[in-house]
Image (cartoon, rainbow over all chains, first blue to last red; front, side, top):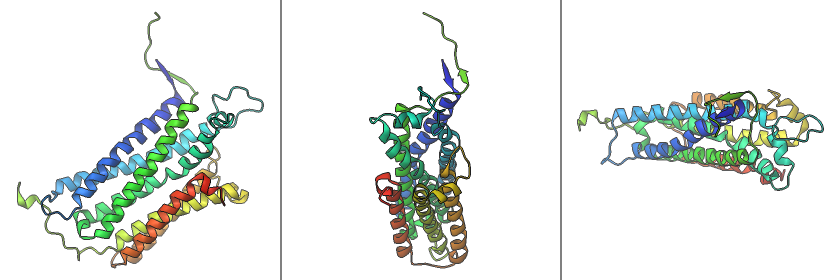
Length: 190
Length: 115
C-alpha cells in the first residue's frame, strides 16, 4: 500500500482539515445556539463556556489550515502548466479537466467558485469565535449580535460545504497526484 | 448542580455591542473585498499581474492576502472606534448580511462572468 506525497497532502487538506471542520460546524452551531439562549431553564456553566471557546478556537485554526494548505500546497499542483505538446495530463489536473467537455465545468464552475468562496469560512468563524470569547453568555442579552454570530457561523458552514463538495468532485475526476511515493505497508503477492 | 457554578446574571449594560458590531461588519467587508478583487483580477490584466504575490498560486495569493489585510485593518479601526459605544446593530447587521450574500453571489462564476 502506497501513496504519493501530493495525494497525502490532498488527504490532509480535504479529509483531515476540511472534513473535520465541516463536522465541527454542526456542533458549533448547536452549542452557540444553546449556550447563548436566554432560556433560564438551561443556564450554562463556566466550564461549558470555556469548552465552547476552546472548541471555536480549534475551528478557527482548522479553517485557516484548510484554506492555507489548499491555496499554497495543493492549488499550485492543481494549476501547474504542462510542457508544450504533453499528451498525458494526469499530473496536471486543471488542464485534464479542461481537456474534455464533460469535465470542464468542474474547473470553470467548481474550482473557480471553490477557490474564492472557501475563504469566507475562516473569516466568518474567526469573527464568531471572537464575539463569543468577548461576550460569552452575555450574547443572550444582545439578541441582534447573537443572531448575527449564528448567521455568520451558518455562512461559514455553507462556504465550507460548497468548497468541500467541489473539492471532492474535482479530486474524483482529476486527482492531484505525483511526487515521491510513500510506502505505507508492503503486501504479499497472490 | 451547584448554583454558584452557574454564570451570574449577566449585565447587558456592562458590555456595549460596539466591539461585536465592528467584528461583524469587518468580516462582511473582508468577504466582499475578496469577491470584488477576485472579479477584478479575472477581468483586468493589470490587476491580475499586480495580485500575483506568490507565482505558483497565481493571483489567488494576492486576492486573498489583500482581502485579509483589508479585513483586519477595518476590524481594528472599527473596534477602536466602537468598542465603548452602543451602535445601531440592526443597521450594521443588515449591511453585513447584504455584503455577505453579495460576496457569495459575486464569487459564483456565472454571476462573476456578467462583469
